[in-house]
Image (cartoon, rainbow, N blue to C red):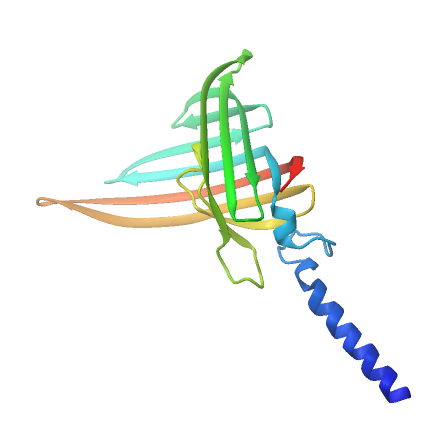
Length: 199
């Protein structure tokens, strides 16, 4: 009887561990435990809360550096000392069936009702790394995020998440007898908050 009880307890513990394994911390800044899997946490409506980023492009020895700073209301884009600013909003709707829609809106910073530009895209998402870890997601989004397809997710909670983009690339282009060397370095941190809707 005692041995049967030990086997039952051991089996229950193993079963519960397997059942809730996707609910334990995966990203380095994740909550230690969540009652929701990373899939369930991601498949919601999200609004960008803040963003800081740097993109450095070097073409044939000439470097162009662009800084992005979004404070939740306005975005400031500084390219080699020249700054432009807009009222800014970015929203994504991530569905559990693999679909994602994104909307970027830029407005006049002096008048939020004066929409200068809106872009939208409907696409798909999937986990880029193995199904066990789920710390990197592939999303094809609109606007400023369009050039980047892969996002690391160091934090994914029920009501907020953080993405990072960090990569460098070098390549050469041959045109006739001229070789043009190009390099790109990208570093972004993007914070999102839950935006009233679960999918």
